[in-house]
Image (tube, rainbow, N blue to C red; front, side, top):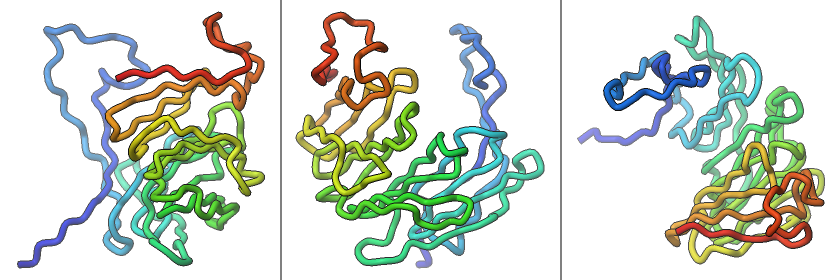
Length: 243
């Protein structure tokens, strides 16, 4: 049989009632299932399985980066997002598992940088030239699962992986991490900064725990100016856990 499973990507339009500009919360009587509108597909037939899709954080929402196997693909959305045109691409080269697992588009540097993860390696790319700008080999002892940029500190990047660790990097000097968290007992699948208070880091793991960490010492307000809770120390990193 000619059965083959492919992971693909598409652009959809949400119902107007759910757009970010609408602040109305539908009541129970109007909470009927809404239909998404398919705008276009990202054609990855020549590039392999899609692992990740990233919107440009700022701008007019017309640029998308997708990661397909070992390819970084930059798309331009045209004709009211009804068509996606591949504008540039780059291929991952080197040793090890040459397939991307995740990526994140930096909101800094005029949105010209992205970070990607493959196997145990984290790399930075310039979307203008599609060239590598930094590489963190063996960033984790096992597979890197997720990445996130600090929304307020332009060079700070968080990563997590199957070694049960969460690491924080300064991309100007990637020799060693700025900080390492070892709060989980199994693979860490996700890491996210709080968009307003970047000392707050949320991580999710297959140890069945979601952990909120207060990383004041490496935040944009290291002396605790953004922390309202008097019980949180200005000096020490505190951890709160939600099961």
